[in-house]
Length: 252
Ligand code: PEP
Image 1: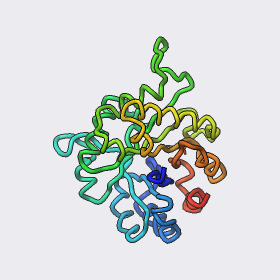
Image 2: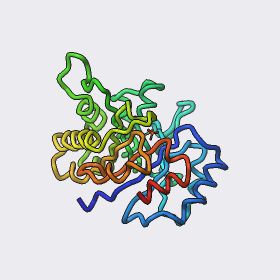
Image 3: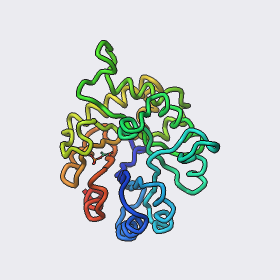
Image 4: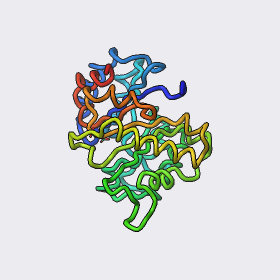
């Protein structure tokens, strides 16, 4: 599908100081491909985003928040407003990362609220869909884990909004483990996600939604993963922290 321009996105998590973040952007900004060919993005700690945006001016690099809240303003100490992100020029946000689910107890209902709030404010969310070895929502449940996640996290969106969503398929056992899913396993998960979106919103919509694979992506395994039918890009944790390694993935 010509609408699905491939994406290489880094997720720094809680790493880097403002100075380190700015130095990284300056090092890579003139070496990125045009966005019409391959989109490049970095999710960084909130504190780093504005200085990085200034450093990235004129380059195709997109900056992303790693999380946001579902309210635009109010008494929510410590949270980041999706409205304020958009106004600041940050137009992408990761939602539902497995670390948010694991350490901060975010559930599908909360993530669905965040997805809707992000879209209402003009943000494009990257919604992370984890996957377990068990692959069922509950022991006695017939619903595959990935299907259940997508049904719940992407519930009730307009056909126009769902097209602005990118999904990242991230098997829990592959994140940060050095053990990437092989291309067939990764493709199976991404295919299942696209089928579920098709069941919810129809084939034409599902055809336009970009689906990324994440979990121990390296410069060595990027090409094979991205060559599969349903994987439109990669979400990279550890190997996005070093500028040269990130550029190797971009130029895979
Ligand atoms: C991630 O955090 O989204 C991720 C895929 O991490 P890593 O590449 O380090 O496995």
